[in-house]
Image (cartoon, rainbow, N blue to C red; front, side, top):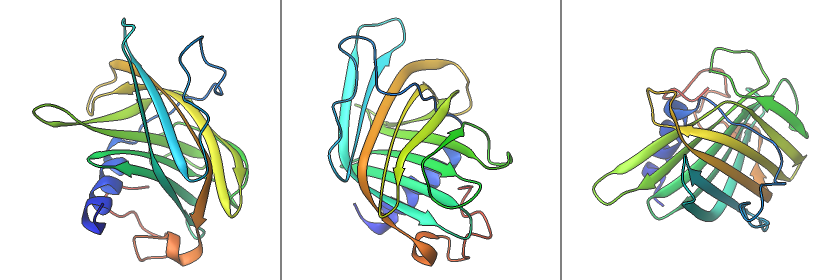
Length: 190
């Protein structure tokens, strides 16, 4: 994926981030993301009132902006992307971050999903819940469960479960993609 498309996806993450739920990966029978491998984010979703299940995985990267205490985990493959955002009160460490809008104090989190359709690309944001980082350092691991809603609505159309394991972290000023050391918001990304 080109740098411009990555920037667009990160911008979409900022616009779509609203919520993320976490109840671990001890999912209902037959519906859990497969165990993620190093540097990969895996997700599964179930449409509301349906047995239809979708699965997706993609290579992931993580950026830690120390100045803003902001972690972004981004996985892309083709035109599909999934982004996880966590704003922590301090250093990158295992933690739980409840879903909140960008004006809430740390810790807070959010998720955005971009899927290509037959005639258009659809974006979804997570509603409700919490992100759980289970490992943090040179790599980061975590898991979540969330309801998915289209932008501008709170009507949940699907349930998403995701996990990421041993995703390499780029840190320090290099993780502050807005070029400001994390002191401002770039294109709506908190």
